[in-house]
Image (cartoon, rainbow, N blue to C red):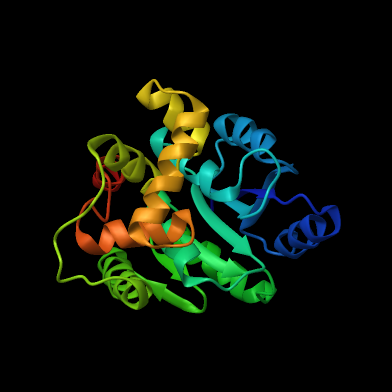
Length: 236
């Protein structure tokens, strides 16, 4: 039986080692690498040929969601499980759109984490304590997006006050791109991107980038799944 190859990424050595030790007790799991920062993790994952990456959401240099999106764009076969100390459904929405297969609290029990790994390896998804197939996670995303955006938007109004350039920036934000990545893609300065993001938040009446992304998804301004994610799913 082939063992499931895993990379564990967390900037807290004690927590990272605890995850490694717990997984090492399982006969069918093999930890093939560890990293403590986002860039180190991305470099490792591009060469480790791992089946699963267990990533902390909050990492130095690149965060877990940025790594997830980059692996999705690379069409990497590595499937991402994100761990977080924060219970925020809007962050879950953002993470799953970026291409994550699972999003769990850091206090997850070891056996539950093993269950999550097996579910994700089989092509399933996991949020919190619930497992989903692809159709199920799509329904969950749609339902949670509607709940998240309801307090601060009127979904019946199709008008949006953003310029064409602001819409390009907003679409990139919904894909989890950093300001630096957006600037490079659009051929504009980092400061110009920051100015556009500030204007977008003000015009939409939201507090942060995640709320702006949820707002755009609910209004149908951007697709729930981008073309990269569709292509990746189709190839599996």
